[in-house]
Image 1 (cartoon, rainbow, N blue to C red):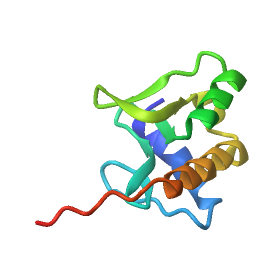
Image 2 (image 1 turned 180 degrees about the horizontal axis):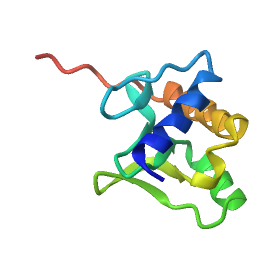
Image 3 (image 1 turned 120 degrees about the horizontal axis):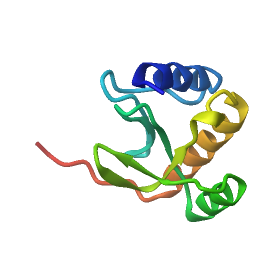
Image 4 (image 1 turned 135 degrees about the vertical axis):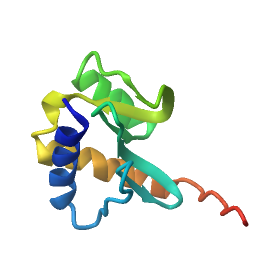
Length: 114
């Protein structure tokens, strides 16, 4: 799947979630509480950040799920959302909500002074 195709599906999913706003022009992502919790990389892959429990449940439900990499780096707490699931807006949307809840449960990162 190309970046553009994945981005279109990502935007369609986010459009069903009024509490979530997509950010980023060249690197689309969502963020809350100073943490990103979903993004699309240039390889046309979507990742969602989840709690360890949600990661385990996701991996059990969708065997073969991989860790998410962006620009060659493993993204901590992220799972790669298989392309086959991207048309299921309700399912992926529910995991995005879980990602939002997870990052909101974390202690915010202090902002760096410039």
